[in-house]
Image (cartoon, rainbow, N blue to C red):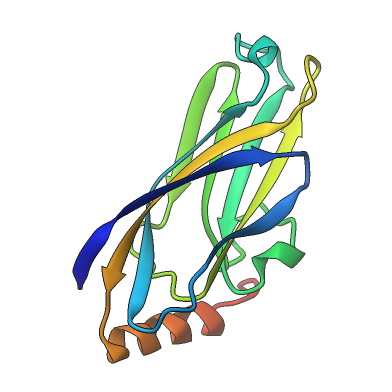
Length: 148
C-alpha cells in the first residue's frame, strides 16, 4: 500500500444525528483512521461539566447510518471518541481499510448549552491493489451486523 496523504474532516453533530462522513467511490483507493476527537461545540460547555454531561461520536461502515449502537459488538463500528468531565477518550481500528462509505453518529447529554458535538476525524488515503480492495470489501460486508 502506498500512502496518498492525510485528510482531516470536521463538523458539528446534534444528539443522535448521523451522516455520511466519507463516500469512497474510487477503485484502488482505501482509507484508514488515524485520529478521532470530539468535544462540546459551545464554549460554555468546555469547562469540566458535571456528570452526566458527555459528548461522543461513533464511526461505522456498511450501512452504519441506520443503527445507533455504540457497542464494539457491532462489527460495523470502527471507532468511538468521547469528551467527559473535561477529558477526551478515543479508541479506533487503525488497520481496517475503508473502501466504501464511512458514517458518523453523534450522542450527547448536556446540562449547559445545546449539547452539539464538534468532531475532527483524520484519515490517511492509500493506493491499494485489487486483492487488498476485495479483501477489505469482504471483511466489511461479511462482518456487518452484530456478533452472535
